[in-house]
Image 1: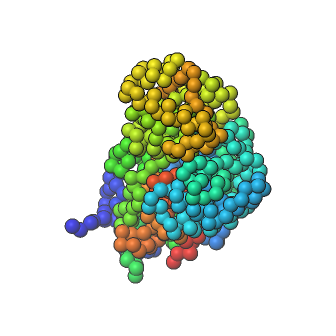
Image 2: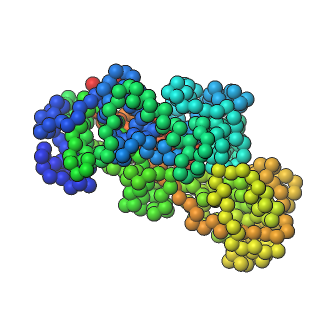
Image 3: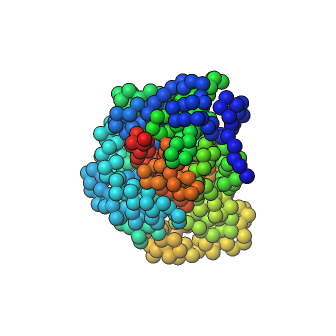
Length: 508
């Protein structure tokens, strides 16, 4: 079957991502280029911002096309963690030992089977320098450590565990070291305005200082390709703004940095059906268009079925109780990274989970400081015995009783042979028992996308780079496969965004 592309000037569906083929790299076949630059960056989130900075610093002329009315993307709304380690200045200042090999060992285990080892190695080896680059760009990290369980620090602390580094099973493969670096910000409001804003703000200021042109309210719809000695080459993009077509020429390269497919219901149902209809940690502009545009020029994809999942519950509560599935059995250590709990629950436990606490644990959790007190839910079932709440919750007879009996027997000795929960959190559940219904309380975002190499070149299905096309951020398959740590997206988006900008500026 022959794949055809629209003729120059031929009408195209607004949803079409088929590339426009022109006669020469200079633009024959396009009536007129509305905008020209050396490097065209599609998307003004963390990956696009870092790509634009690095490209502009080489002397290249850069334009950013952003679909929204201003900069920031999902990054500006996020908790702001950037996953970095290997001995950053912040880690050293706070007395934590870490090195490149230790970071590699953890990420190899935590990012899941199939994680891109070449990218992982490059990221770990360049992590300290990347931290320094962000600081030089104006991002500030307060030298204070937040050591409590939580989704993010409630105050402006700069370092936190964000991947289960200090919990089983990862403590058996790597020495625990916190790597969640949080830009300093006071008056945070989790889920609405958090430290991601203080990551994007200084980067946007650097972009303005470098004279990068930013075009907002532009929906990039398809790529423009031209034949050269190496075959088809990406030489620009076509977008629309308020219904009017905008043609943009890229003399050296196009960088796709327009986010995941989390808000594309059809793509989610095709690739991650268990999370379809439950998007989280993304923005509506994450509709997969960048991925589909890459596919339309032959780009390969990776890990399209992988996803990160948030469990909507305060970690201060989970760590003090036990989490059981619909069979009344524990399925994960409760003191690990809450995103790992969410993955296990949504993807392997039928999206069912119940949090079991005694009265003392419930009251202790309620007295702690947390960035997410709105995730402290009231119990649905309470009783004087485990048997009573087991019956009321509709769990199989004897199942929860057996689970609690086994847990309590070992917890009394400070042990958890089932899942390795840290002794700090082990205590038998006694007295009045409460059960919080967590069924369905999850949401997530897609981790798969365009396949790229460590230099952020988009790879064709035949394995070769697509000439003129680069990508970074959540429209690519980054560090994570079937695993995650908070900060991995902002980390690999910023790191490989930088590489995308450098590679695009050097393209000829």
